[in-house]
Image (cartoon, rainbow, N blue to C red; front, side, top):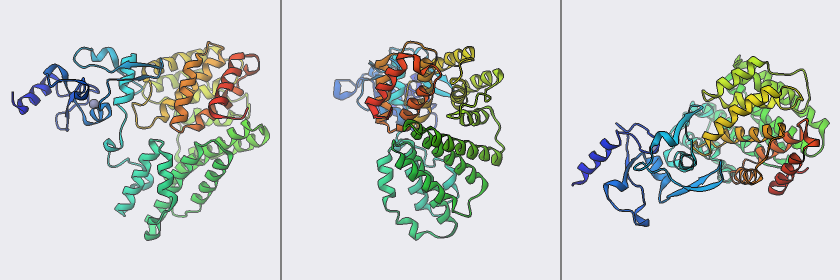
Amino acid sequence: MNDILIRDKLLIRAEYECEYCHRILFDSPWQKEHIMPKVLGGTDDFQNLAVSCPRCNLNKNQAIESVDLVTAKKTRLFNPRSDKWENHFGIVAGQLVGRTPIGRATARLLFKRTEQQLPPDLSWWPINDLKNETLYRFLNHQRARRLGNKFSDLEKAFADIPFLKKVTGEDYDLARFATYLLMAETLYTRSGVEDIRKALKIVSEAWQIKSIDPTRQAELLNVTSIVLQQLATVLVLEGKPAEAKIAQERAASAYKKRLELIGGDDVRERLRLKALQKKYLCDETIQPSKDQVHEAIEEASTGNLGALSYSVDVLVNNYHNNKEIELVLEETNNILLSIGYGQDFDYGYNVVVRRRWWILLARLGLNIDFDLLQSDLSFWKSINMHNELRELAAGLRNLPNCNDNNAITEMLILITNIYGVKK
Ligand SMILES: [Zn+2]
């Protein structure tokens, strides 16, 4: 059979879809993929070939197995010839995810975006109006690094910013603004209070740029609020509750200003503001309504995981509300059973849900799988999401049942051991 005929037959058998992620391939490039890699003895037999989009093929490379982070076990990859796709994959919260250990392990390895497969334009509005193309490409590339948590590469690129000296006018302001945002985001994921203070300094420098429009100001208010909130967490962990309270109040008011500026009042925004106002301030008056909790769960099914996360933040710190907490836990379980990690270039989204899940389990006094927790924490550390480790520690210490629950003490010891978060 000649190669063109083989390729046609493959494509027809695959119904013009990537056999791993089901991306439609009518007009897009695709590759002939060896299910058992040739280096491991796989043949060119029709049964050993699959149609793959470049992303899945590139990510699969020579692998035949991967780790499912829900069970923390190694498992073989999905085999398009012998497995039924519907049994292993599905759409949850708007994303294609694995539903079984095989599905999750495959999703984690194959569905993550790679630098080569990133869209040429990450559509990041701080750089969208840049006229200088070299500069645009440079910042776009740094943005990709930021989304992949490749902070040391990002830092190296920004260590010396000679390109800025050659730019003038509006481009100069935009580029500087985008650079500041990326640097602040990088710093606030770190552990030390010095990093957070550096991030605050960068944020205040960004505020000096005169010509930024209201949309960009809103984004800067968002980053300002995150940095202040991270500062509050560090201060709580350092045993400085009074200072933490001030930082937290500033974080909440920055976010409130942001909402005023953009007129944002969807359920995610409202819950997030409540979460910020409540955190470390112990404001009992701030509660989501039952309707809001249901709305948040509804939103989560459409991909708005933030709404669900913030509803956890406002719910967990009270002695009452157990019914709502259980409801939110049930939805979080559903999402996590499917989602695993890494189907997206930006890991952050999944980790923030995962972190809330641990908080919910601890809050309800349910059994903690310490092996799984350990593998989670190591994973967060390995992708530089130190802020999530910090937030988990502070969140656990903030729970109303934290003093009479041994599991919480043990969880905190584990976090301290892995990361060295101060008790
Ligand atoms: Zn694919």
